[in-house]
Amino acid sequence: MLEETPHSNPNETPDTREQPVESITLVDAQAMVDRWIKTVGVRYFSELTNTAVLMEEVGELARLMSRSYGDQSFKSGEKQGPEALADEMSDVLFVLICLANQTGVDLTKAFHRGMEKRTVRDADRHKSNPKLG
Image (cartoon, rainbow, N blue to C red; front, side):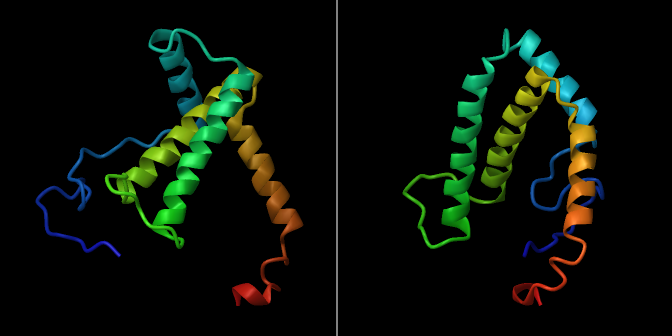
């Protein structure tokens, strides 16, 4: 657990002292990625390439999770810690957003549908799971 350290600006995060980050919606994120791709990234990779890149990024996140929370140890010089996890999760999110943009998926609508599905399907499932009790 992170200890809070005293600091002068209540908007600063205790561990990094970075400027506060503005919240964005999934619509905003999809638009930001699209703008970046079209101005900096030149164009989207093909859907198949981005699917492979997504798997690569998920693998990098999995490797970090297995070393951080599982039984594997870190190799010398390997990145670790909360910032490394955040970076890998951000990479996964970026490529997932690319795929959504390329295939016409509205992630806001998809997320709401997914939450509704889980709420209906799993209404009692987890409550009656003795492993979670």
